[in-house]
Image 1: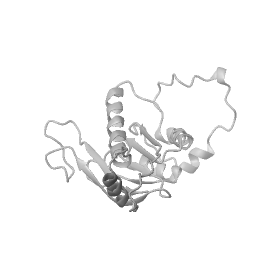
Image 2: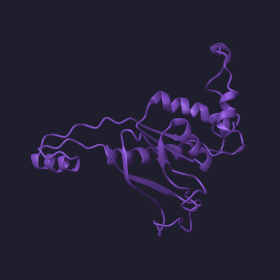
Image 3: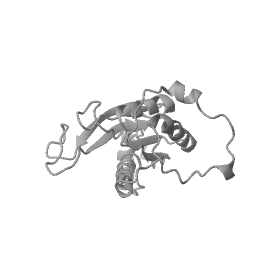
Length: 204
């Protein structure tokens, strides 16, 4: 992933931590000692015998996609067709010193490879525009929830949450804006941009 000189790494890191923390609170439960508590948790998961619930092993991944500053009309099929099929020579390639801006149409394949390698059950993104989040849906074969933060539909950046539909059943979801009017696309008067937070309710 290529970052511009003016991109705030600290801001992206804080966004990632916030989203992963929220997902952890939703899906991961701490052990409890009371049988009544086990019973309550068991009921929530369809278990009524009061036994200690099974721990949930989830793989989570978050990525700042970086805003699509160089949009084009290249299709996914065109990008794949133009991939270099030769085997790179390590001594001739510097993998970690790429400072030049690269179009999303080029970056999306690398992002797909990274996610497939890590095999997350839940994958979240920041700074994803409508085209970007839909490209990843096609490439990853994962469902996602999220809306454009500027109009609650497709305009602006998404805080998209992708999930493995074979493991999770989506029950409900919503998006909240960090403002005095959290249920509608809005921002604080002093804010430089719209800020939203996606939340999902799912079942394993």
